[in-house]
Image (cartoon, rainbow, N blue to C red; front, top):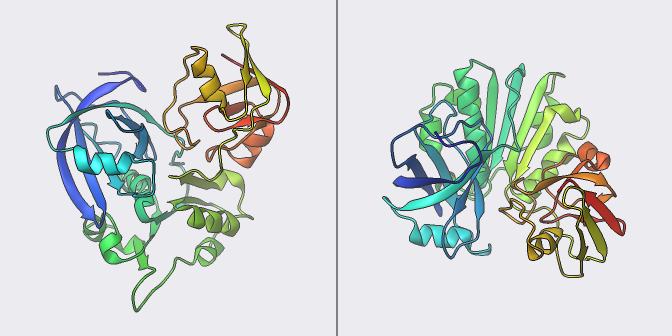
Length: 320
């Protein structure tokens, strides 16, 4: 079995229409071996020719090691990855993936888990719901979409043994309704864990609604960048292990400067949402622009994502 986070060739076993503009892809190994293990909330990176590397959450149960299932929403305003995949990835095709990695882990010992999803953000949330069901944990799911025909995985949700714990609402139509995040969080009894994955506007509302909830019980993941990348440059990055010093010039990210000098750094999304390019910070103060680290982790400044984050001073020392 391949090791975690190594490149792996898989093939497309099936492609399924899940909702308007959303296709689900079932990926399997060519030799029918189990795929590397993953935990609920994890994602993989897809690598295809003529397309940017993109990260997609696994939506199947972690107990099903025979396959990875992802769902991809067509985004005509994105970098072109979803358009390329929708047009060019077909049943039987091979592709290279890396991962899985998890920046959105599930606290399996929580007394009650409140899962909140918007649009395609349902993918990691649904993996969590399946895992919580398997370990006989208490959970509820709130899912918002523009309309019923835009909502993925509805059929499997409606047929789920705990379908009564799943609440859906749609923001368009005669009976338009939005998730009332404040009301959902207001039921907190001091033991609930809250999870959210969805568009930026939902994440901002979620953060506001959970402002008084201890950070260790609040979990979220963005599938789009929440901040503009730091491209101001004007500082030097010192590499502690190699002894090299590299100037980051205006218009460059740290990652681009490193790659330009032949320094290999794992990278994928280049937006601070996948976690591939995380590097330890030994000295200096990062200018964090990622959508992964918590506020306390950013304050500590012990790690950073070099694809999008910069420096608040004129010098950073990294563990490279």
